[in-house]
Image 1 (spheres, rainbow, N blue to C red):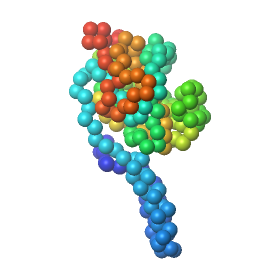
Image 2: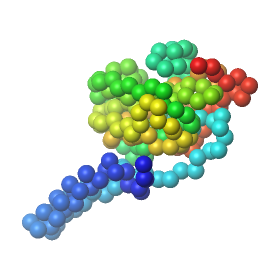
Image 3: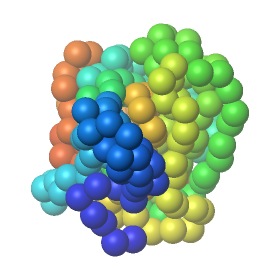
Image 4: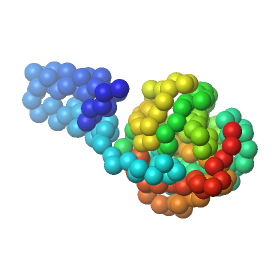
Length: 217
């Protein structure tokens, strides 16, 4: 998919506010400032920056920009099927909202679950909110990334399907207007971040696979 400085998912909003700016200017020029501010916000929210992706094949990069809410051991029952480490990342409305693949691999699982719209920073939001699941696998391990809606976030966008190939750091979707993204990885992966750390999608290394103990699937 060809990439642009502003994600294509933001273009319809930009078109709407551009039309409103023209209408406001015709009615009363000073009114332009209102849709103009929204136009600038949409430009900011849907920004789609390039990132320098780490070349280490055994590293897992962050699937999103934001702040690590917690790192905990859980049982993952959809794709990894076993004890896993879950890293939850909260994206504020000011963060870049493009999601990226933590590692290179094949999309081996894709599922969607409808749900509520609780604030994404709530501890139980992951269990109750609308959610999209993307499982990725390669010769070393399986991981699962989830896109979770929030109180402001109302739409999950995912551009990949099962059997698609992803490169490390490749864009695979976004969540509109504030959200949470989770990374589930096998319990033997070395975690390199802690609660409260700020992370950059496609760039910050969250964990690293032990080269001698690649997880089996």
